[in-house]
Length: 86
Ligand code: SF4
Image 1: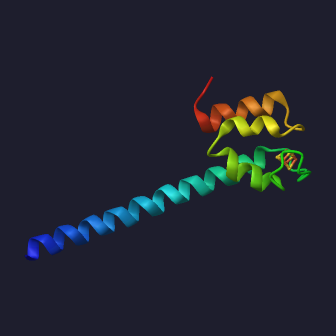
Image 2: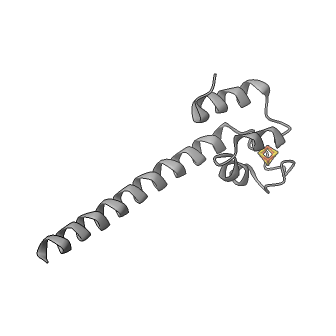
């Protein structure tokens, strides 16, 4: 009985730790992507702001193409750094 309680507690703690670590790195990447966007907050992409774009682009990199002011070089830089493509 004690063994089950210990294993359950360890599993719970591990799950929370993994969740916190993955959320942290995802938030850091969103902030980094936002800083690499033009920063005009012009809403040409339809996400309201560069922060809105970064929040969505982290899940779907193809959305970056909706940012008209984003240069081809910056686009490729973001893809390389956050989506591991050459
Ligand atoms: S179109 Fe580009 S510059 Fe304009 S708000 Fe969207 S991400 Fe920012």
